[in-house]
Image 1 (cartoon, rainbow, N blue to C red):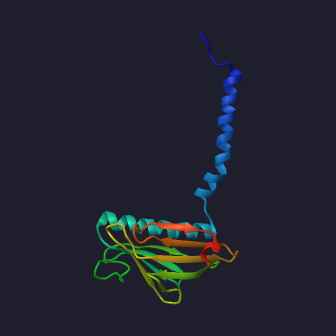
Image 2: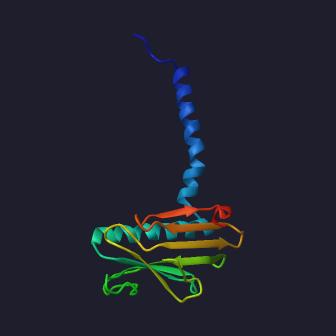
Image 3: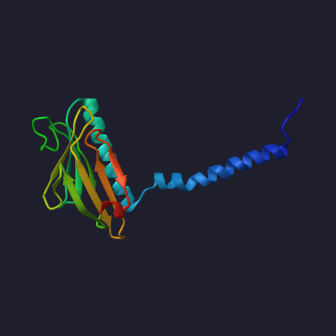
Length: 165
């Protein structure tokens, strides 16, 4: 009968440990997001939640941006009244942007809402959504562009401002 020697087992354990150690920083960053990247991630997550809620509940869900208050709020709307951010009896989820975040652009259905008090983005039960482009800038001059694809309602993230010009 053949078996593995202690040296062979130690080499394999060492390789596994090395691979695991290389992945720890990435896992740590994913679990402990801070500042600008956390806020961008929260908006992306809120878009995904709005889309999922619309599909699962079979009702239009509305994500309302308040550019002057640096917030966006998730609520359930109705097909008749998409401007209503929260339907009675539903709780809302809110993302508040920190002091170091500026809204450079907020377009919904090709109309600019950056200087308006509110902008509603609707997610429909069939998985589609309104068109939205949100560009955020941090005080460290980091830029992130969040876009919604109208035919799928999926949010995408782009961090290269040279491609937006």
